[in-house]
Image (cartoon, rainbow, N blue to C red; front, side):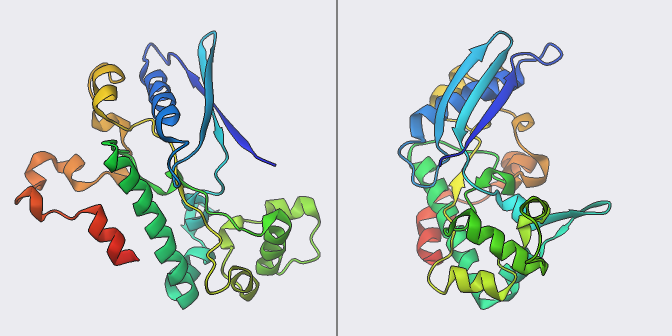
Length: 242
């Protein structure tokens, strides 16, 4: 059964409408590309109700951020899954497939002259098992050493450690990664139409996440040196990852 995400967006917050315009951009890009992109988040609909706007989309699975980090004590720490992904041969295969699918998503957008502008782990969805919730819970229980846990307790066990045990490796296998990446949240994206109509004051760094800004966004034109022909293209990156 399909699951959905309902996002509520206030039309005004302390007199500012920036969140509302972000919602309008999600609606615009979602209705334009979500049904044609294999690795793009699937938009369903949006509607307005009094002072709120609602955006409905398919739930695309666990985000990469939720898998990379585990929250313990005073803050997030690296998860066992992320450690396994980087340090084992099976993990490297999954990492390669994850990056390949992400590059395909970005390439799809750029061929339509759309720039996402806010790529970060929480906007990379769809990292999920292909074996369904029952098998997924079994993997979680095996990782946690808690096969006798009740269903309610299992839900409290972190899903971030998937892939760190032999059972997860057995389920995913050598040729199956168990992931289908989808790029989500186009509230900061730009194309020719949105720049003219959906950014009242023009695009700015305010719509981007500081920690994940590319150098050209942080340092401006001074960072872009050399001819444009010398800059990396996504087509060549895709070939390298494959």
